[in-house]
Length: 393
Ligand SMILES: Nc1ncnc2c1ncn2[C@@H]1O[C@H](COP(=O)(O)OP(=O)(O)O)[C@@H](O)[C@H]1O
Ligand SMILES: N[C@@H](CCC(=O)OP(=O)(O)O)C(=O)O
Image 1 (tube, helix red, strand yellow):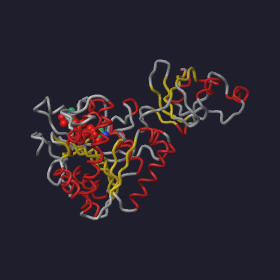
Image 2 (cartoon, rainbow, N blue to C red):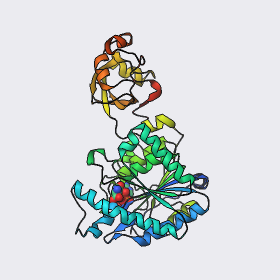
Image 3 (cartoon, rainbow, N blue to C red):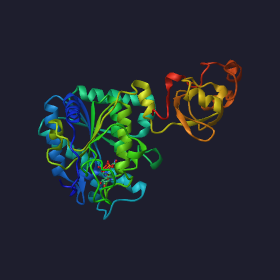
Image 4 (cartoon, rainbow, N blue to C red):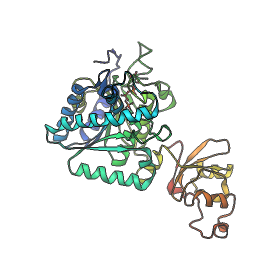
């Protein structure tokens, strides 16, 4: 293994091996996320690794599987081309470097698949594209059409237009959101370690590889650090948060060593490489799945104790009477965070009224809505069907 780590790997029991093989053999639609740590090195883009992976992806395609690639590496590819001596530090420099590097990266993917007669399509997305539901649905239609045409979409964050506050965080999150968006059967996250270890292998030589994970809890999150390697962005913590999103969507995810020889083919042959995250059941689908995975709600409603209880314990909708305060400016249908008076997140929902209207009807009975704002869309500010609780999201 090229990471140089010698993981202490506990053996899988037969049931888990069978389960792993089932997930892989049944998976028809795949999201394969490839980190900068795999695709790039000190000399920029590593074309040898890229070609090894594209050869395997072509083989999976030829066997009838649909593949969406989420490819990092634009910034790292641009550094050398621009002639910088180190990775850029400021946001404008990163964005400019990514603009140069993205063409290098995309050209390399296109060339790699050309010999198999597979077309690729560049898809650059920002969080805004997925936060707004109509743009989320547009992105879904485009990806669906590309897959129907047999084209391999190569997705990256639109680094040149995003600023720090509206970034996805990184491509780990993006790959999980895309998986939910297109109804993928499996997410493969390729990085530069053998998988998830019980502690950061850079600082703990005795770290153990975790083979199977059945749920991402705080104990597991404590295993991972947010610090990436020299060229990565999100680190292992962001991969765990991505796994959480996948599991909420009922999609299994595997973190596997991207530079390991034939890693993708061996995974599909049932070899237990990396760490497999097993979903218990599909928690959400459709609109609730989109809501649960939203990374950036557009505003906040502060609720009184009664409303907080009604939403948390009684499965009720949110009425204006329970709203104490409105934060942010948003329109009808916006996703907002609902928090209690102590600032604790209760859940996320879509509002039936815009922020300026909620400002006028907060703390009042639903029968008063029309007199206060001139019309009544509904009694509820957030209907239960458009709400997910925080501990489910
Ligand atoms: N518990 C852990 N298990 C495995 N790797 C970890 C852990 N905690 C931190 N890491 C680090 O996370 C790094 C991978 O994240 P990152 O650099 O963002 O990669 P990528 O570019 O593939 O997204 C690894 O190089 C590893 O050192
Ligand atoms: N969009 C950036 C990559 C961001 C990112 O998530 O990087 P990584 O942690 O290596 O997957 C780029 O192409 O350089």
